[in-house]
Length: 190
Image 1 (cartoon, rainbow, N blue to C red):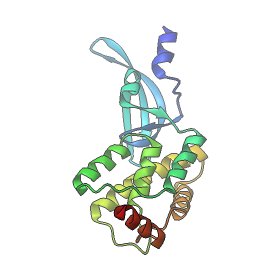
Image 2 (cartoon, rainbow, N blue to C red):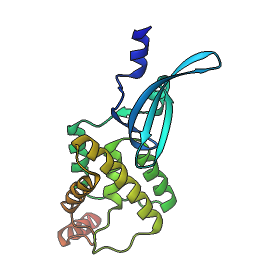
Image 3 (tube, rainbow, N blue to C red):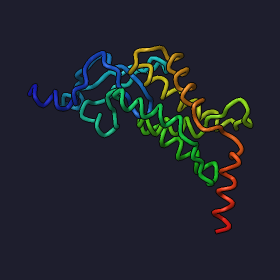
């Protein structure tokens, strides 16, 4: 019986920080047993401090909901590298892009979340963001900074500074540099 229990728990332990795709970083407070319709059910009690919310998730369901351990440092490094890349903005309607961003934020994939932060980031010199862009940017930034803070054992403020430093190293946002515009013109002429 004990063997079955540990496999269901997927190696998750009490007090451990985890990532729950729909809510971000949480902490397992306890593992409880409840009886539901005559069957014993084992539940993770997960606390999301920032959202002042506690979830009870059946241990058997964690794979289905995509709950995972915190990202390993090399994955965090990849997410930070992603922030330095060129923003990729599809020329589709905002409503469709917003849905894609939302799906990435809720995927629980730290690199996908970093892509949203990178694509929606606006520097001081750039035009204002719409309210919905700002909301999605902040949601992605929040998820990313919470996980980086938990992995690196730093504060969220420090994690945000690290993210902003990586974004600042990205290519200059705004009008295309002259040589790129020339290359593009040559491509079109060819």
